[in-house]
Amino acid sequence: MAVLADSNDNELEQLQDGGEGFTVPETNSFGQTFRDYGVESERQKGVEEFYRTQHINQTCDFVKRMREEYGKLNRVEMSIWECCELLNEFVDESDPDLDEPQIEHLLQTAEAIRKDYPNEDWLHLTGLIHDLGKVLLHPDFGELPQWAVVGDTFPVGCAFDESIVHHKYFKENPDYNNPAFNTKYGAYSEGRGLDNVLMSWGHDDYMYLVAKENKTTLPSAGLFIIRYHSFYALHRADAYKHLMNEEDIENLKWLKIFNKYDLYSKSKVRVDVEKVKPYYLSLIEKYFPEKLRW
Image 1 (cartoon, rainbow, N blue to C red):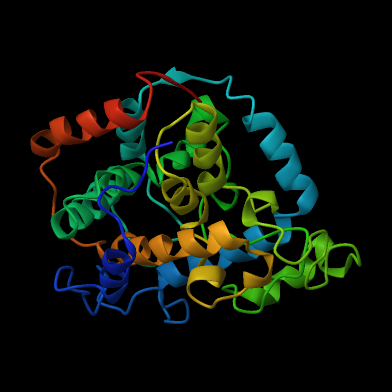
Image 2 (image 1 turned 180 degrees about the vertical axis):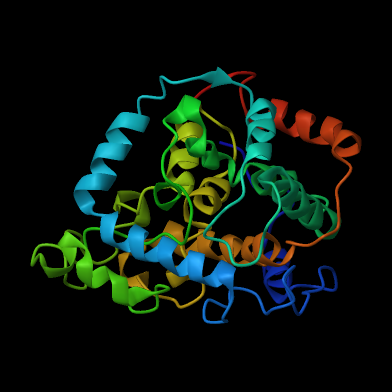
C-alpha cells in the first residue's frame, strides 16, 4: 500500500485550512449558488424527481444485489484512460451545478488539485478517477438508470438521516418502516467502520470495488475518497459519525480537502486533454495495472 507522499500532521492542517491556492467561485455554471436544490428552474425539477426515485428504490436488498452482481467484475477489461473516454457520452442528471460531459469535470478536479498540491500525486489521480464508476450508465455495464448510478449517497440498513437532500421521499422506501433498519444503528454498531456499512448503490461504491479488487496501490485515503465523495450527509453535515472507526476519522480529513475541488472546480474553463494526458497516464501506470477488470 502506498503512503501519502510528503504528508504529515502540519501539512494536513495546512491543507484543511485551504492555503492560498484554490479560490472558491460564488456561483456555478447556471449563475446560482452551488448545490442549491431549492431554486426554481426546469433543471431543479428534474433533480428533485431524480431524488424521489432514488430514495424510494435504494433499499438494503437492492444494494446487496448490485454489489453481488457487479462485484464479479466480469463485464469488461479496459484501462483507466479508456474508461475516462467512455464518460464523454454522459451528463449527470442529479447534479444541479454541471451540464458538461464527465471527462471535463474529472480533469478540472484533478488539475485544480495538482495546481495547489503538486506533491500529492495520489490525490491528483484520485481526482481524475473518482467518478469513473459512472460508466454504469453505459450499455456495456447494464445501462443502469441514473438513480442507481449518481446522486448523493447514504448508508442503507439504518435510519436515513434528515440532512440527506430531499429526505421526505424516504417515507416511500420499504426500509423506512422496517424496525431492523430504521433506528440510529440499524444493522450496525458503534464504531463499526464505514467499510462494513452498506452504502446506497452507485458509481462511488462501484469504482471503489473496481480499484480495490484490481489491487490499486492508492493509499487508503484515496479509496475512502472514491467511495464516500458523494456522502454529503457525512462530510457536510457530520451525520453517521457514530459508525466510523479511527481510520475513517483520519481519512475524512482528506475527503474534506478533496470535496472543495470536486464541487467548486466545476466551471466553464476547458482543459487541454492532450496536453495533460501524458502526466495522468504516468500516474495510472504507477498506481494501477495496465488493464482492469470492470
